[in-house]
Every structure is written in C-alpha cells, then in structure tokens.
Amino acid sequence: GENVEQHPSTLSVQEGDSAVIKCTYSDSASNYFPWYKQELGKRPQLIIDIRSNVGEKKDQRIAVTLNKTAKHFSLHITETQPEDSAVYFCAASRGGNTGFQKLVFGTGTRLLVSP
Amino acid sequence: DVKVTQSSRYLVKRTGEKVFLECVQDMDHENMFWYRQDPGLGLRLIYFSYDVKMKEKGDIPEGYSVSREKKERFSLILESASTNQTSMYLCASNRASGRDNEQFFGPGTRLTVL
Figure 1 (tube, rainbow over the protein chains, first blue to last red):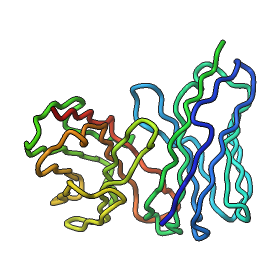
Figure 2 (figure 1 turned 120 degrees about the vertical axis):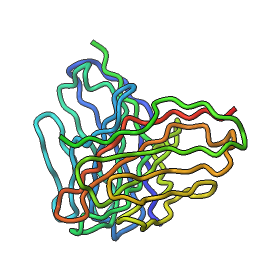
Figure 3 (figure 1 turned 120 degrees about the horizontal axis):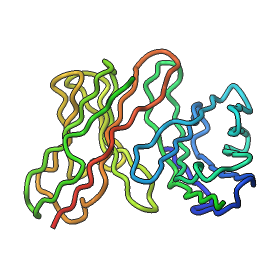
Figure 4 (figure 1 turned 90 degrees about the horizontal axis):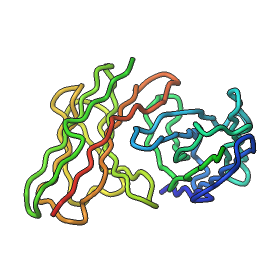
C-alpha cells in the first residue's frame, strides 16, 4: 500500500521567512496530493491540493510542487506570519476523478512562526 | 457551509466498555471516514464508507467496527475498549463525484480509556 513520509517533524522560522515542508510517497499510481492545516485545538482543513497532471500550483503565499519522477511533493509558504503556526499534513491518494479516494497522510509538521 | 459534527468532544471510558462515537454531516456527502490521530503518527484511517450500509477497512481496523444506517450518520464502535485506544478520533466526509475531493473534518472526540 501507499506510504507517505513527511519532513521535518518540526520547523521554526522567523516571521517573514519562507518555510518548506517535504513529502515523499511510494505508490506511483497516486495522483492526488492535498495539504491540510490543523491549528491548535481545531479540525484539519484543506489549504491546497495538486493533481499529477500539473507540476506546481500557487494560491497567494502558499504553493505546492510535485515531482512525479522522484515521487515527492513540497509545500512552500512565503512571507510567513504568526497565524501560519500550525501542524501541516500532506497526503496522497490514487482516487482519480470519481472523487472517492482513500487518503494516506504523512505524520505532520509542526510549524512555529516567531514574531 | 459544510458541517460535520461529532457526538462528544471529550469521553472517558473504562477498559472493556463498549463505546459509540457518532458523526453526522449535513451536506449529503456519499463518503464518510473515521481516523485516529496520535502524536507523531499523523492521521490513520480506521474505516470508511462510500454508501449507506457499505463499509471498507482502512489501515488500522483492528478493535473497531462501524455502522452506516443513514447517509448522514457514520458511527464508530469500540466493542471492548482498551487503553491503547486512547486517542483523538476524527470523522470526515466528502463527495463521491466530481473533482472536489476535499475532505471535511469534524471537531474530533478525545477518548480516554482508563
């Protein structure tokens, strides 16, 4: 089955710096890669996702890149702000366009942005 | 606005008790999921359901069962709770069709088994 590894487990940056979180996956058939953000005491929420037919996707200060050959994908946050402090989870699935997918999550990265 | 609710935020049970965790979604989603979240292990899938009365095992189904009698409700059952089932349990749901794959999570139930 699919296995997703996520690094680093913790990341501390200064406000305004960039943060990068990396994930690798094992199943070459995986084609959907979402990122979820979980603030302290809150539920996980989707912040960005990418499908295997594109290599990069941006949404304001966040971007995700995908390297299918190497089977890894990364989350990039620029101009970090204290409200970016949270746990970030990557995930992978091979669900296709039916919408049904079994997500396999990484172990999470705790990002701390210091003012 | 999608809403996924769980029956309890905190629950304390004793070893050997039968425990029911309930999840309700109000967006007519076909798919529903139960995860447990443990520090350093991320979210691990226990069971999922893609239709009423249909269920599939996830990655860690041992010690758990599920029930989906109505589309909006998905229950997780611990037949005989054990201390190693102390965890945060998260329910999620999403649509079965189209390109909107986002899973919407409930607030979680923190279960402690003594």
